[in-house]
Image 1 (spheres, rainbow, N blue to C red):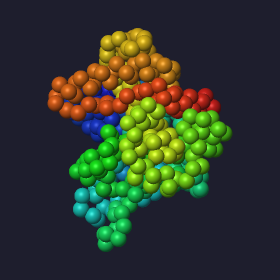
Image 2: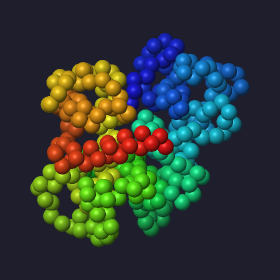
Image 3: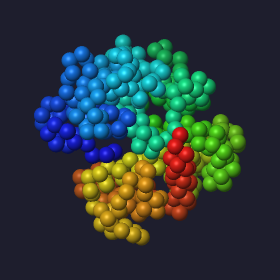
Image 4: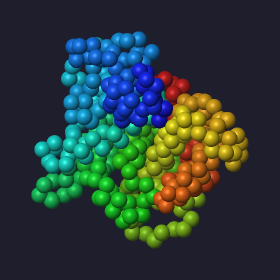
Length: 357
């Protein structure tokens, strides 16, 4: 995430801010510029951004701004009541008549908007369900049936990403994290994992990379349900970290790809934040200090430089967490096998950027 500041007063801003805490300017996010902007009311329901590259052209807020779940803007040529880049992918939202669901939806949208930010920064191809009725991306945020007859399963199927609304409840998510032995179980992590399945379809299956991917992650044609059943019933193998970023990644090549994809998103997004704030993390393991590494990790930095910047940064943030009596921020080890898989993801993304989808 880039560092944002108010164009009216210079105050530092967070991605989710809607009002500047110093000068009270209304704020909105410009997806076409991937930038936050202070706004000036035009008077007809539209707003003039102060971000220089916006050239003062009026914008409208996304229709979901009315629910206080979105601070993104749409172009001046878009009619009122339309959805922004991030919200256009919503197919089903939680039932807002259910107590607590508006707040759950807000949490889901925070995670989804951060996902969409990274998609924009990485310049990845993405199509809506309207553009591609068979395989386009869409999100369903679903509640469990009131009669308790079944539970919604978070997952992906041919472009449809389903997120169980209950995942927005911190207590439930933490209990599942402990029960399943997951290092990370966050809303943003769910989105990044499931979008990995979508991009396996787009960039691997439909991108002519099946053989190359199988050489790294294994053959995805093995029975998926059988592989999952085996995963949940087998004894834990101590050396799984040699080649897998998470225990769940060992279950099936599809899950290995999605877990590694999500981890790459974790790395470049966090590294972008650190570099944006000119954070110095001391000497890297095999290279320059983080403060000496230049370029954009989303579009310019080599994979080697990304890793050389990332590793010492994790030492710093883990140390900070321990100083506060908290668990490690980054409880992972990037072994040679895991780095090879992350490097594959990096190359696939860079190749997609060069093709300019």
